[in-house]
Image (cartoon, rainbow, N blue to C red):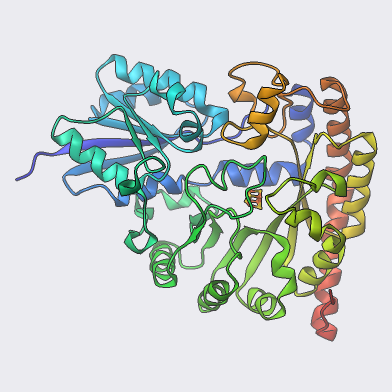
Length: 451
Ligand code: SF4
């Protein structure tokens, strides 16, 4: 019989915000709190995927550490794992490094992967035995094999070594069965990885992999696995931009339409130009799509993505929202504040745009220079980062850089005021009412807005 090993996969989950006034405000702003809670309570699909790529002679334990206690850490140590692997985002990376040091000090091998360490592998190597850069699936299989042969390396990279690049044809179904399903209100499936638009502030679009899409048969397998443990699930697609390839999208929506699920994803606005896909989207029980409009100030979109694609779409924004929602699909519109082109006027314009658009939900965040992005490099070169190692403040709600047309506190104040106005109870209720009206109108007249 093969020697038995044990691995603990730890997801550093949860959202932290440091701006105290915003935090206090957040507690009274229902629209804001709800989306934050949804994000904080999603399981780590990356780790469930690694679990699927773990051989049978390894026992796998999956854990999420949000606000954790000493006794939870002691319980992890008492499991006597051979390896602990962390997945962590920038905002929780310093906590991850501390825990990693603690586990290493008692002889446990620690591996860390994810977006942050993929962008800054040299930093991560000071705190972990093994750093995983890029896609984890094949690397993980190699790490476990190397561990068994006492030959692990400090650094594995799918970006530097083509042999570690993962082809979606080789996908395994994530080990959803490791989850206590009663704790979750959504489960995730990844149908695409990366995004071809490469926005300057976006780390997700390229740090792990270039854009690619999963075979539809594989997505169906993953969906069926979820349905096995949760008969009418809510699925959140763990994608950056799902509907890039329209032919493949048609197959995906047709697949989703066959099952009794509700689902949510993120996309760019191009879906609004395709009536056939909008009709399929509506039929497939899509609960909501989230679109990054980024700014209500057209000038702010110049240079954001490679071909100024978003800038070219700006004049269609309002009509596109109207059209998508006229199919009964809720749009959650995302706006970022703090671009160099933003002035106080931009905050007023954003509020007005949100009112004019009748968006059913809204997400506003502060521009954040995540490592690995062009924005990070630009602000670093210009000496505008407020501190070194500001990682815990990469929350999307804290200012980390010197803005162009504001002082830091002015930007914070403008943002807080916009939050108050956009998420006031009455305003949120009004957005809901407006969307219901659209739905009723659609049922009565079966009419769609044009573009
Ligand atoms: S469209 Fe969205 S996912 Fe794609 S690069 Fe831009 S911000 Fe990232």
